Image (cartoon, rainbow, N blue to C red; front, top):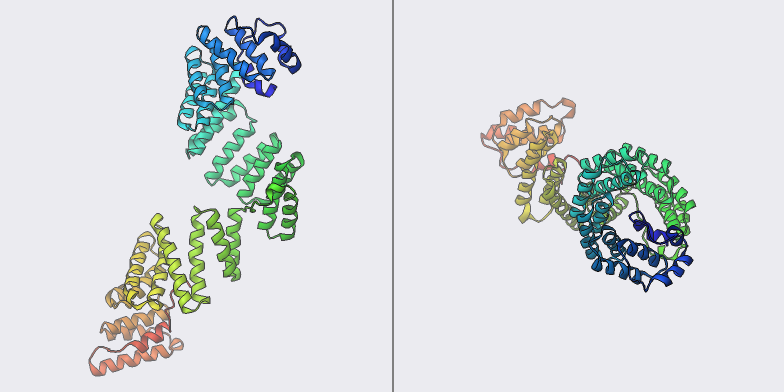
Length: 523
């Protein structure tokens, strides 16, 4: 009962009822006193407020409400009548009445609590902008109060303002608020947690971790320990998170205790300790309501697992994991980039032609949607070009030219962002494929000249009727590196010189240079 009354008592002036403090701390005395007063109308606002508390203590909420309503109608406007009636309505979920009465009380008297309570009402109403305005007004008026109880209320208002700014994404403002809250109470775990959240969202993970650890050291309640575990878990600090979850479980009972075990199970799973993971899940499932909850996982650590799968060549495992990440974390842009690369490798190395085309088309669609949101990602532009060039080579012939032009456009955009020779090399090859030999020559002249590029460049010169330039390129190839392709090209130059005509058929040369399928950089 005292917990119900706690939001009212501090605001009450007590005068008329003897031993009032003793009565409201003992429900049995409250019930005896309530029998005496419930039929008596209040003599003035103060009497009404005291009777309100006794009736509330006795469990007669309806009669308590009625006493204050009578006083509000019968007597001149009184701050305590309106304030306590508003608080009662707020606890009963009648937020619109609470807001109305808090605003009326505020017109009579301004104290920190009225702004704090009004903000609470607006928050329950879902109006965070009005809540923020109420908090800002209260903080500006009472920031320099000396009374300890009022200072604590101002501190609470600053904390709430910080949380609102955090929710709205105003990270710098939120950081200022939490720092200010710490100036009121330098051991506040809640201000430290709020500041840690800001640091985490800014990418300052180490600083956030230090703040969380400091909060848990100051106040090791199970709630703080659970939150600390969740914060560190979500940022990949698995060992520390496990410690906090276990400490919280030691202090908790009921579902919260089993949730702690459940979260440790997810950590063990993400670390690959599957037997330990199963043991903790079995502990958590002793609480029946958890048996249908799918285990969550750390976004950061699961991405690391995907990369590990790729390194080990486990493309199937990597694809399965990355699709699950996207399902659970649809805003994770790294996951989409990895999925495109995984599908590209899967298509080229493991699938027959029909499935290869279908998978490349899926990867291209994902890349296109990604580029619609992030057009300045040069790596994705490059991958998008590769996908289009492969589809030009093995996909439907009617779409070949369009696919190559899409690749050229993507590579041109990528080069505007970053002057990468690999992008330029692929652009030169793309121009070659649509017989724009001047453009191909221009791009390929400006990239590092390995034998493959020299062969393509020589072929482009030949296609363009520039046999001398082609011969110069071929002569720059070391004797030991002169293979079949070299001699096919050289033979074509000789034939061209003899006939004084351009080369008419280059299919053998292109086959020798490119192979049965184009071998683009990056695969």
